[in-house]
Image (cartoon, rainbow, N blue to C red):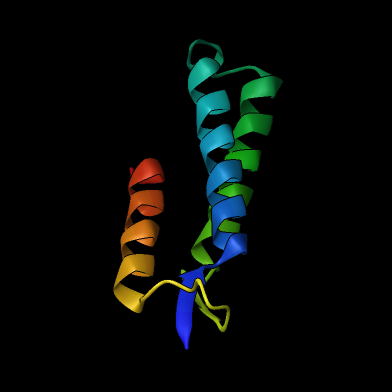
Amino acid sequence: MGSKVNPLLISSVNRLEAAIDRLKSLKNQKNSMEYKNAEIAWRNAEKQYCNQPGLVEDNSPNALTKDEALKEVDKLVNKVAS
């Protein structure tokens, strides 16, 4: 039995990364409603990201070892680390 990176974690990282980029692009408009909406989107994306397990079981013949999958998870986490 092997492991793989949780697809929901990958998706949540992508959403969080997009939310961070949007927030950064609006940094000069901190009093605008658009910035406030971007902040809300960022918080929601962060909540989803924090609630996802990194690894799931994979019974396929091309499954990763647990260590290989953990390395992939670390790469994803580092992309959005603050």
